[in-house]
Image (cartoon, rainbow over all chains, first blue to last red; front, side):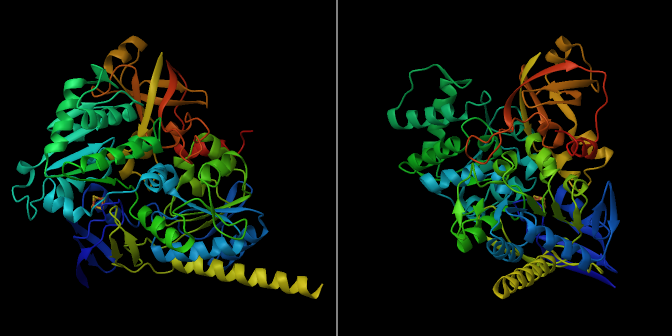
Length: 441
Length: 126
Ligand code: SF4
């Protein structure tokens, strides 16, 4: 039987493109339309590099076991631990986040997601100075000045420019690219910079100074230096003029700002620049969120616990202090004694010091695909790919929720949601039997 | 020679995201892009192995020329190779410093480790 499924949402990057067409024949994906290279690959290679069966580690070897056995052992690890960490969540659905937060509360665990190593500092800045943002639809329909600061959408969000910001013809931008001016600010001449109308090269680590200089020009009309952070005064003056005189400006920023010197201070300064610009024109700012549902976790966690990430339940109520309660700080100070990782690969993306400790404590990994973290895990539980083999909800980078579809059947596998629900059930049973014993004694 | 290291996403790193134990992932991420003039001064050519050292540790990667980089700046795609030299600490934000790391780079004869070899080594490191 062959099937053409349209309006499929791509479960890869924060663009969450919802115009993908997938051709399915006998539960095999044959062709994908409209997706970029990443997205097409995600659909077409969905059956490659998969974890085939639940596994537990014995010595240096992995032994295949049943789902029941793997989940039982996972429950044992989590209930035995004094302070477990639940981490990941960016490539799975909001329904999974909800269950995971309940699990964290029940266990008195810490729950964190990959935001802490991408846009965590942006979240900190937003909490400090606010977030004058818009939806990508508004950008498409209105923006005549598009700035990409410290990000490279051509590589990280390949359809961002063609679907939302630069090329599409919108309601008030019917000439598409011809009507828009593209500025790229970065420390190196990226592929995105190649097509920019204006490329501003900043010295690494000097974004704060450049943002601050733009604010000074805006507010005082001049700066007392000929060059700031490797950028000539004329260029800064030109950029400030352009920003002031556009009709609808948007500043997209990437992890180049959150990961370098200044971190959340850089973002706060960028937001303040946008705030200042709103005295002259309509200007907005948006973080280029990486994984397709990293935004979703922050949303779910905020409405469930009051905090967007790095939430510590060890006191019995939610406590939030990034720098203390985030995954890297906890691992580096050896302050957790078991970890459950779902839908992410910290062994590949955390600094050495964190991975060194992660490799030594009990580690449960839930993931459809083999990862470096699964290589150092004690229990590996395979799952369905959300958005292809299981449905669910996800939030686009502009916090617009979209429904992910199931396009093929994955027989013999459980979904992330089913696995997490079973773990939650197991933990509940274990904890209630523990308290019964305590009552009897 | 001393450099400032930046790490980040690339298209190839993204494509090979779910095959991290493969040679392709290694080809995509175990590389260090460098300005051709700096390569000349260091005495290395495209594909040579270099050792990148920081206060956090060291790692072997293949060097690759890149015109878009200024002299004194190198780029390694996001992954376990770059992370082997990312320092500990988060400046009380939860965010490690993945960009703007001071490193020393020299020509090396050693081999470049695969991703899984690199992280499994951490199980035994003190
Ligand atoms: S841009 Fe992102 S969401 Fe859109 S098709 Fe490509 S990977 Fe998928």
